[in-house]
Image 1 (cartoon, rainbow, N blue to C red):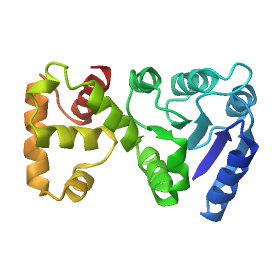
Image 2 (cartoon, rainbow, N blue to C red):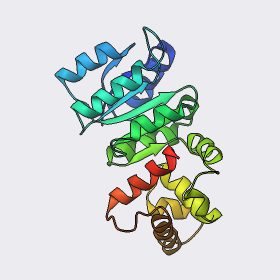
Image 3 (cartoon, rainbow, N blue to C red):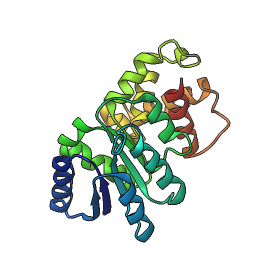
Length: 214
């Protein structure tokens, strides 16, 4: 795949470039902040952009704003945002309009090469990749929410894994349950979240968004 990277840490930026090149991918550009990234995007669009959420000059939300602009101007381009810490509101903003071709990973996850590369593949395929630790923290913060409190422990586990961006088959493998059990639990989740009258992949996106926003 073709990628662009925006990360102000030279060590991490160069490490990402080397890793991706060694895996056979092409890095079209690697930048230290968001502005030259957007300038490069205007000339040539990659398959996926990997960028830090906090970059110069203020080190607050420059990366997030760039990610949102990319998703608005070039919706066919996947976006993988990296964060040093869990930023719940940023995760919700990133997913608010569309949970396709998008990822949110903690930087520690990059060191787990297989998981990082798997996240890129899921995003390129049109899916999502949300860091398991981000989802776990959101589970803790949403235990009081309604209608999420109506979910059984198994349904919550399925929804948690769904929120990471996994397919039904991957959910079954990770939770060591049958594919039919995954489908049964998803149907129950959609009913309890009042999404039973919508169809297709949109129900999965809506379920995740409702989960994250609670």
